[in-house]
Image 1 (spheres, rainbow, N blue to C red):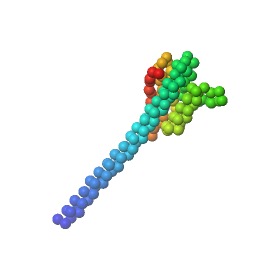
Image 2: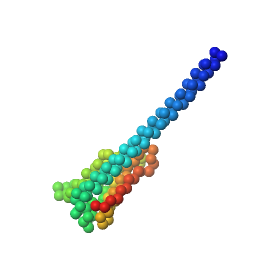
Image 3: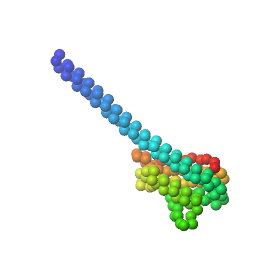
Image 4: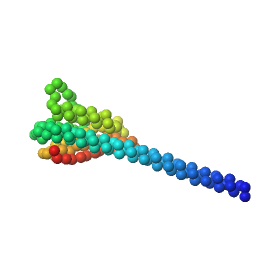
Length: 143
């Protein structure tokens, strides 16, 4: 009967160890989910930022010249005579690079803006850990 207590202790130790491993795995999953949620929140805020800038400069944003349109990979070179739309787009692209991570392929976070009539579509692309394809956030609104 003396050996029975030792076996019970060993079984209890194995059960507790498995439980602690489960808790650790749950913590890792929670941290990854929190990071993904944070990045989506950043993308939402960045999309809202450029949309607010466009609403502040509505006449130019809705002009037939499509001054706010920008494609993935397009860069804006600011000069002394740059328009407010150019400054807005350049600052927005800079914020994307600063606030969102690169993709698995090493591509930087990027965004595009399409204005059709009064409808604005903002697409933001970035990378997340363990995601082979870039994550895309798309929002559409009327200005």
